[in-house]
Amino acid sequence: MSVLKYTLWIGTFLLAGCNSKMPMQPISSPTLVPATSVYRDLINLPVPAGKITAAVYGFRDQTGQYKQAPDSNLSSAVTQGGASILLKAMKDSGWFIPVEREGLQNLLTERKVIRALETPQNAQSIQLPNLLPASLILEGGILSYESNIRTGGKGLRYLGVGLSGQYRVDQVTVNLRAVDVRTGQVFNSVSTTKTIYSQQVSSNVYRFVSFKGLLEADAGYTENEPAQLCVTDAIQSALIHLIAQGTKEGVWKLKAEQDLAHPVLQAYLSEQNKQISQLEMLEKKGEKNFPQKWK
Image (tube, rainbow, N blue to C red; front, side, top):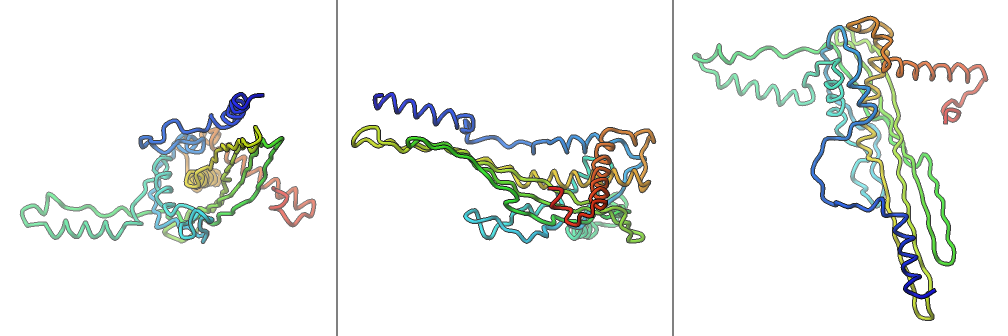
């Protein structure tokens, strides 16, 4: 086989494994955050009997985790904007009237400015209404970010030509609870987890094609599932579970009672029932290390 034919063969081999992932347009225009199946469930929830005025004072990163080197030793592994994600999910669900509390001081300052500019002539025209009080507080945070839950890979090399692939699975866990403002009672508390999948595929050639002719080529790609989107999915899922539990236990009501059989609510309630069934089954067997068995 001539050097030219050999080079063409190797080039075809490398491109066949990587051309589907090569970026065709490195520069792209800003777009809306991609919608997921969880978001579809969120916006398709049944209509409540009445929207609940709710506040979020914070949804903190409680993991204490930083990105692994060489990315950064100072940047957090998960987003610090959990409260913003939760507020948007509450608004989009159609179940809540979110009121501003995270930036409450800014709101109060601006109201003071408006009052300071009032004159006797326009005092009636710019009369400020009272702030809307919340009947429910949603608390919680990002509990953990576990790296390398599972890792693995495969590879093959023959006569200086190789192809390999690796994958890594991380996991993020969030907790969300609903607190009654009047009594401080915690109505419900939900914890959800979401896996973060990363993979790397590479191919390389290192071979002498003639006495002094060395052919060396590398190609590959890495694909990482965005951690921010996974956190968003986990928060949205926790909110749906919270709503589903509340409707089942009568904490809040649906506009139509028959909507309790709504497919979205039933899907999330069945997930909770499945977890309870697994616990009962493991307890009967006398197993103590539940999480290991779930894996």
